[in-house]
Image 1: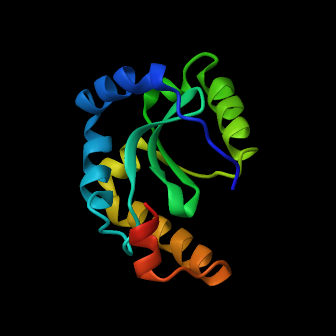
Image 2: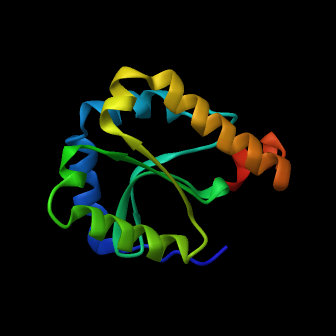
Length: 135
């Protein structure tokens, strides 16, 4: 795993984003928080390098992004792709979900996340105890 530097300058902005979460971020966070997903710990609005990602699981090297309407306007799709490419070059994998899918079909979103985890566990098994202690 590539070392992901922590940018202290983003700490306060990250906190502000957590306090102003969108409805879809709140809905998904209720499903991801407190190691509810196969014992994996997720963080929300996590600074990684010079970026802040919606959700991050260190032990899975997984970033989850929830894309609202602003992600499809102007050059936002290009910036999102560049950002994702940079973070993927550091060994991270991405799952992206549309804001409406999270709000209207959270069971589908969670099924995709669980399938990702199952695939990762098959290729790189970690014990539940190791997962909890590595966080």
